[in-house]
Amino acid sequence: MEGEIKNLILVWATTLVCLLYCHKINTNNKFMAFIPVFCIFIYLPSLLTSVHFAGTISFFITWLANFKLLLFAFHKGPLFNSSNNKPLPLSKFILTSCLPIKISSSSSSSQKDGKKKLIMMMNYSVKFIVFVALLKVYEYGDQIHPLIKMSLFCVHIYVVLDMGLAFLAYMARSVLGLELEPQFNEPYMATSLQDFWGKRWNLMVTGILHPTVYIPVRLFLLNKKCTRNMAMLLAVMATFMVSGLMHELIFYYIGTRLKPPTWEVTCFFLTHGVLLCAELVLKRRLSFLRIPRMISGPLALSVVMVTSFWLFFPPFLRCDTEVRSCQEFVAFLEFVIRGRFVASSDVSCPYFSTN
Image: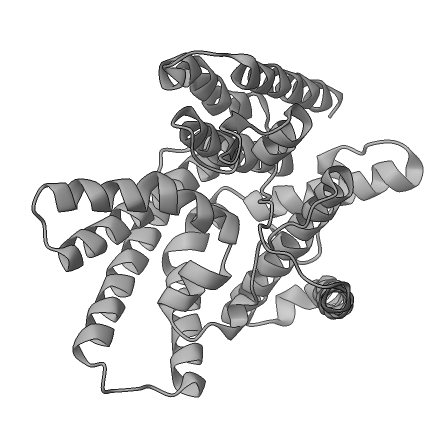
């Protein structure tokens, strides 16, 4: 663990140096100047073996930071201040690059802010209670049906991601002093696949993929005399393809590097790309047919969960990623409580047991 901490410090130090270079460099062709940084950011997660560290770095740096810098190279995106034609101040530039945050451009009254904060506190209080309840349920994992286990795992992933990203946004808000856009918008209330992927699930990824993949591909196809509808559908497929490949890369870093890739994760996102395209076509051609939300919502969420059980989770579980994750979490608690790390072989996880 000590070696892992040293590597983590090295990774973040290298990241800061690279971002300082990107912020200060002054050239007309920033894309070419950034290529070494892109390569370094792809390499950095390979220095880490921890599920949490490798997963976080690959998502924050290899994916989001690289895509943000790609936009910045062409004077676009969250790192570029279009009002004065300059990059963000250095502190905001680094934080916005490293963390899955986006500064909100909207302003609201103090009364609305107070209500919004109260609702948010209640919301995350409920999610924390759900998280604690899940930890208790995990003790009876052997008595729970596998499908129910996977369903609980879906809830667990959402709650952990939502609370974790919200905490990072809160820390960044405290440093930046600016309002930040939320990372999730209650995905369990989605009314369709379009609503789920476009407006509710992991909005930072959606906000990055839209300008870096969807818009360029759509404009390219329109310039090639492709019809607007076909350009839109192909751009959607390209977006899901890139998302699948980036998830495949993250899975590689957190454990599947020990085994050859099966491309199930990429197939998961391609499947949803096809389903979303079919949904868009049906909405246009059958606009007179309105499916009630109480039917379309559960149907969309069921599709997400079933395809997750089929394609998304198997490669994740095949490398005992969840067991290692649980062991790391328990080891971290031991470190906080006792002031020392414990060997992972001495840590047991009642829910994700390999026995």
